[in-house]
View 1 (tube, helix red, strand yellow):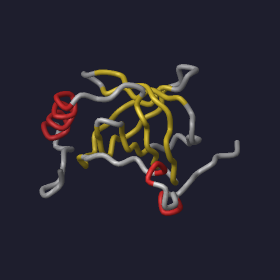
View 2: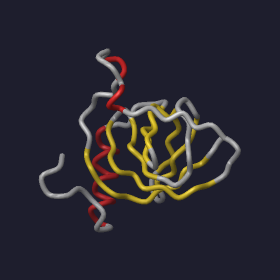
View 3: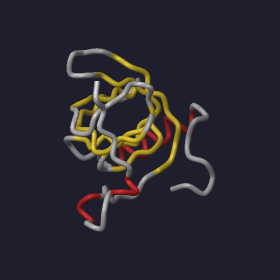
View 4: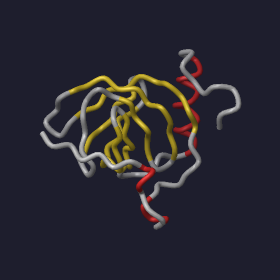
Length: 120
């Protein structure tokens, strides 16, 4: 399978090439679900209203439609915005409300996987 991986360092000068949003760093387990229903383990590395930065051994291609299930909360669907090695950005189809982001962060903190001090 040919995997197109675009480094954010090569995103160019066009601001539309970058996803800009306030993000909160964390390490929280999740499950990737492909369009065929296959499930793969993943770690949410940060979250914003626009989507997630995800780490997974499952190789993705830019533009691919995926869902990410956060156990005990919800499943969000969207498209892969960028991909580099074992990390990628999932641009969600519907914006994630701030109260939900706070809940995801609280879940990660409670599990001991939350934001490191000084991150917001």
